[in-house]
Length: 127
Image (cartoon, rainbow, N blue to C red; front, side):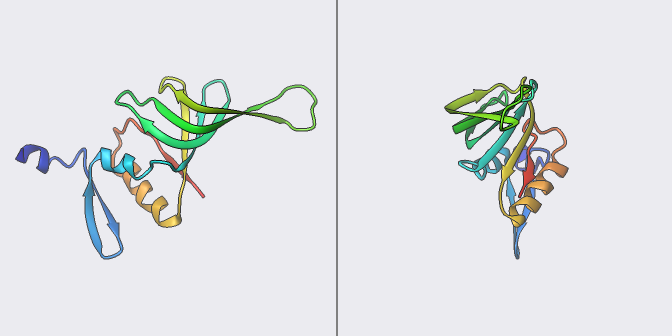
């Protein structure tokens, strides 16, 4: 058990004001639950929805998702959208992943991203 506690590769330190805590990957992902997330996939579409869960393989489920795709024909709007509901986005299709959060959370997430170079969950942060 001590070996797991000493391992810093899967844990990181995040400072919240004056206190500093170590968070394992599960705790870090729990902090993202039900946040607005924008996920881009290889064919150019984007999905905006509430982050619901992620599995060990990196597949993401979004709740209340809306699909956005660009249109080639002449229409009043260059982007089409449609409401989908609950969707699963395979990790093999995902190209980008952005989470909507406060500035303090952005800084802590950027710290997570810098310190965990082998993370299976690449999360960028948008305002």
